[in-house]
Amino acid sequence: MSAVGWISSHPYYSRVLAGIMTVLDGRDVQLRIHTVTNPDDVEAVDAIARRVSVGAVLADGPPTLASRLHQQCRRVVSLVATSRSVPAVEADNADGAYAAVQYLHQLGRRRIAAVHGPDDTCGISRRSGYRRAVDEFGLPDLSTGGGFRREVGFDGARELLDLHPDIDAMFVACDLMAAGAVQAITATGRRVPQDVSVVGFDDSIAAVCANPPLSTMRMPVEDMASTATRLLLDGPVPAGYRQRFPVELIVRESTAPQP
Image (cartoon, rainbow, N blue to C red):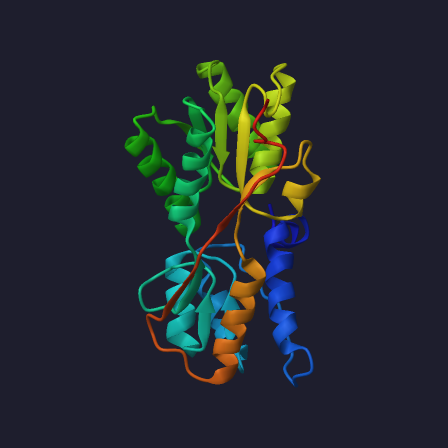
């Protein structure tokens, strides 16, 4: 999918922009949006660095490009942890995933599967939180994954249900994927949450619009983006700076305990 496609279809990016714009409102600062579609496109990153004035909020990206951008202009704050030198304002992804599995376990679910995200910083952290939880609670690791897209959630859930028909809950690494997972679950004749409870991650518009609405771990994207913007406006941000935001469980119908 092209970068433009990601911006228009993934709710994360609109939330990042909303957080930035609340801080820039009334200030004489122009907001420019840049995308890099090739993770090896050093020239594109260098071109962005040359145009940075006040600073750059990095919504996501591989550590190599984040480091390159920071080396070239220094005025960068990332919304995901990348290399150690790049300042970051990040969500507590690992503990959030752990809390999701813990909640499902408290509901009495014992076959808790996971559809993970990609092998990037957020995806790896959420995967590690899931694995820590299932290890602690003595549960099997029933998981698959691939990317933060609805179709990955759908395909992953179908694959898991085919392999493990007794699954009674799923932790899915983002709300778009979780909406796809719910579609896959119901397509097999199972009910959500009576047969399979589902918890997503982000608390985006996708969670509210899913059927049923998704329980999810709320990531405060707007607050993170506004904090990153204020840091840049206030002056130089030290290399290696870290600020971590907790995530919060939001309970909706996809896990509502049944009488």
